[in-house]
Length: 472
Image (cartoon, rainbow, N blue to C red; front, side, top):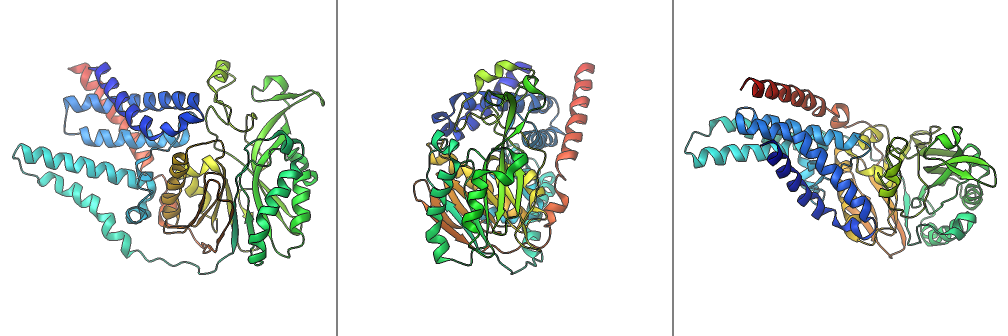
């Protein structure tokens, strides 16, 4: 019974996630198979107690199953080996009007509602086929419908102030040694691409460039002397009030030396260093702000537990730069655009983590996402990233401005509508005028409200189920 339940769950998850993420095979087959195996195994282990309980007691089976699923989604957002692509509340990204219905309880609440609806329908059909009264399912149905009734009635008061932003969509090779050793060359190319948009819109306050095309920002401890940053400063100094934000690779000295599994040796300087994917905001008056990436694609950008399991290196696909990235501690979360307006620069993969993004959006006027999708030959994967950003914009009622190298660049408004879009080789600039968000949303104030009760409930029911089975 135990093996059969585990096998059923594993195959179910494998078919669902495998088919939905098959686009990854073209660029990262190892990453696909490893992440798929980890995801399916974790899902099966967490859901297994509820499946065993289902066969013995139908009284708590639905609650047990829902609690286990929400627990799994929480782990998917917080464990370095997992990823939250297939969170149920994200899955409706192509239909923002449906997500708007549960915006005030967030994506996690959306997952809960979908599960409750599925359970309600199963109870209804069960009683219908067995010709039993269906009254017990009425309360569950009301619980599902309530957000539909309340959400449109919520008072929404938003600042009508706006900031003009230019988002550059480029099509450049992901990693080029010529650009790496002469980073001013890629800065020049990106600046030339930006010129038509800046000339037509001289009142742009923020210019967004894609992530990691600048693969050499030099030492982050001395960023003021970075060749790339100084070149950008010179170029934007002719504008009175312009900020340019981009993502790139920078480096820091690894004091642990060869004991740090993520460090590389610079033979010329005879020292070990670590690489960091960072967002850099540079203002025309010379001010500079830096934020480090916190969420890394496992077995691509960073190999988890490398110090404990060095053989994990064999499971890695190298896409773009071969730098293994780490978090850089000296980081500024909010980057100021003016005295009263600040935004959060997010780097690619981070943008699909719902709870993480809700935290970042609390004090941010809007969100800037910088991505580099040149490594991915399938536009399907880029659309998955895009539609994962839609419910995140809705739950925080904030604009998301997405600039990418290849893939998809887009402007997503606070209602989840995609206002502007450029894809793949369609180079050029998108112009956005996002509304300035003034305060936190209802969901941001209750973020995480389903996860911890679900975890406690799942642990208690698992323990109760174990005790009962021993007694039987």
